[in-house]
Image (tube, helix red, strand yellow):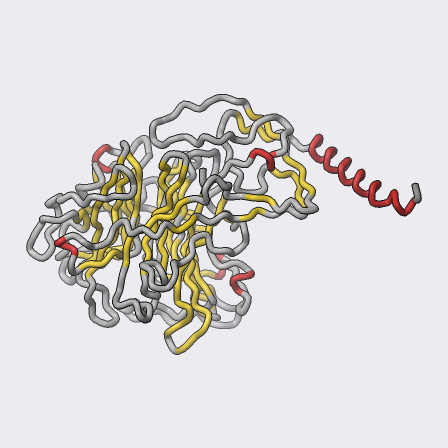
Length: 495
């Protein structure tokens, strides 16, 4: 055979030998009998011509919950809602607010209502007789306990899995509050506690160690660090302008927070038209509730006047509007973020375009460092023109397992960030919807054309894990077998 013809074969043989050597020399990653999720390159020792692709959930188009009860005629469904599955019920805490307000001011009433379902589609709104609204307690409202003293502008409800949590505080809600004049209540961050998710009271403990309170914070008890982990939306102010990001925080009691790190923010490609700011903590100062990054040779911007709470004009083409981080409990050491992204590329005074919100998927292993499989493609997109969700999406933290699928609930709106209702829509419409996984396809796929990859050696002891009763188990197999190519044993998110 001619020497020239041998060169490609020799090169291919060398590549295969190198791959085999890398596999043989790589230490075995012992995962025991724990389930693993194929979300990143952890189980791939080397890769060339390989990429992870997203299969976004499909839109069902259903309207699951809207303000259709007799006591909700003056309310709309707002963004910051929460969902959980317990004892065969899907429990929904949805934010509601008044549908009338003065320009530049919040509605007089902002609170949380409750609904539940046995099939995750048809929801009932029980009359709870807990909160008085318009002179009557005949409604499904659960927070605030006294709307005359405060309003709630954003929060998340969850079950506290801390084994030392008192029974009467088993459910918690980290909220942004707006105290009414003369109430004596201090904000903006506060924690509500409940024994059952229905009867709530405001914890008297102050919340410390946090900065801006905005949109929906997320939190959970993390046994990996044996502390509460919370994610707060931040305004990080650079000399080019402020940028919305999300921070990681830790606490022993959900009241005193510390160890702040920026966890989610626009990446390099997002800042195509702007230089990407880097948060250097030694240059950060605290201006009331906001982190301010001082530019070299330039002073920090003047502090806000007392009582002033403006929304700064953003200094980036898009922002992280909310963190949406949760631990994926069905697999080992996985954190997933349904990140709300706010797009505002063109400027016209104080208005921007497209001024809409979609959702990206980010994944991580430590709750701090995240990557976006599939690049910056939206995981959840707004619906078509004329739909309830044509302008804005807000995902509810933690998808719900229903059989062999994960259902993602979200609030959709036909109004943009500047309160402009879609032209021709006939009025404002908001509702809770759901999206489902793409049939039996996996979240992660491979572009294997001309691809070379080396699976990391994995030590896995096949053993069925006992079901703890809190969620159904996946029916598809996890990565198994020492030195097996991990690419071939992908565990999908959407199964």
